Image 1: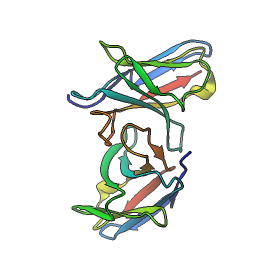
Image 2: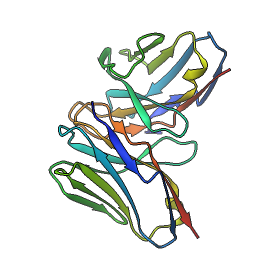
Image 3: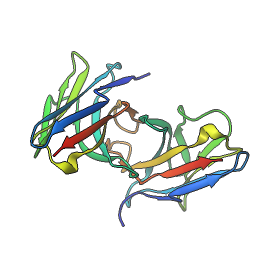
Length: 114
Length: 112
């Protein structure tokens, strides 16, 4: 499977718990983007990362949300102390390099906070 | 920041007819305009894109047009088929490694 991989596909958390969402980019891609999609809404950009660097986090909420893309392993989007308003679909996209415009999306993680 | 408006929110067409979805953007620095198709429960799929140095691009039954002066771009689907039913999103960015700004989507329904 050469596409963008995300896991888990579905995640249920109770209010106050932590959620960890994982994304493995397409083979050969070194740039990762995270987006959030609320029901009946378009996707909202959250953060853009390269290996070991956060390049643009202008769309990330200031509190409780963090992202990383370590040298080895997948990119992680972490949401601490989840609230009901965090319930959404979270999508990861990847692109080849800084000069490449095309972004390819994974299947998403659907987070439900109860 | 960039703002992308998309119309209509729902579009129903007879199978075999054409469908047109329109978007406008606000930031004149935007130079890359992709279109994505999203089926229920799946991630967005890139179907066509256009850059600001081009006015029109075609790929089989799908075409995209761009009017930089008016800051709008459109998706055209000809000879629509049942499998074209999905939600379509337009987006804009200033290219390179920037995050995309998306429209709110158009639910395209192909009537048999």
